[in-house]
Length: 431
Image (cartoon, rainbow, N blue to C red):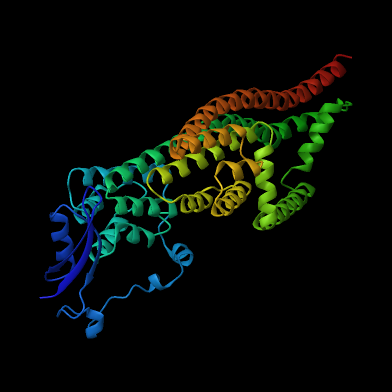
């Protein structure tokens, strides 16, 4: 009977090695998990009669996608990138199953039936298959980069190494929950202003394209000098009409808009263009502070979660750099990582970047002095998240009246233009 050498960890984190004589790798995994261990690696022992199938020339299923670079595998994958809330739900479900004492393969099998929204049952089936073939959970997740990013994979790897996978999964679920809550608040803050803008624009378009032409037939039948506002409105209506010269105007405007979009996308696709746009977004009035608070909170939350779970600081900085979307902050994190490699603390290069606020730098320095950088970063994240909530309310309170005033001015201009023309016609008839 074939023999399999294995490495596993106890719940305490102690590494255990051994040799099992079982029918196949799946049976070895089941026996390891029944013993209350977390399997790290399971390989067929050479020279024990249990020769690997590939060495005997037997049929082996080869996943050609595994030979491709991770980025190309992600592009070819049909799986969409899940949202933070969907990752939180999936992670919490898996942690709960493992907490109940269920073996990893059995937990993944149950996940295929739970059907976590946004993460298909196929993902859990593939994870289960890879784990049964002897891969660790982190390695199995690394094969699906579109679903599980570098942050997720390295966190799971840290949990496997320390024997605290359940605790790490629970912390990750909490991490994604907090991110989802911030995103939800930002989206909610923009719903009402967007609704007011769309309704106001729709009213103006309806009036210009449907109502105004009816009034124009009345005006044209009267030999009256129309007021300036009415003449301006009529010229606008002719300019944007969908017939004659108006149609040509629309085609020209469409071509100009399309050209502008293409040039903008080309500019944004360049490293320098992306950096300038991201820098402008951070300095923009009203929105800039909201964006900065969100970025700094995201940086602190991600880095604290990684370091808290045993990921080395350089690896944690590299993963955080990949997670953050802003090019300016990415550059600052990359420079910080280079200086930390030279033996310096995190706070010093963060301060020299001139990107991060002094509050963040000071709290990180306190964490370094007390030996609790993850705790300090967690305090930073909570501080910025609380400030973000306030900033979102302020931004919403500022945007709403501005939009209402702008819409009121637009609709008022339409009404006054029509009513002033009606008064001019009435006065002419009275004379």
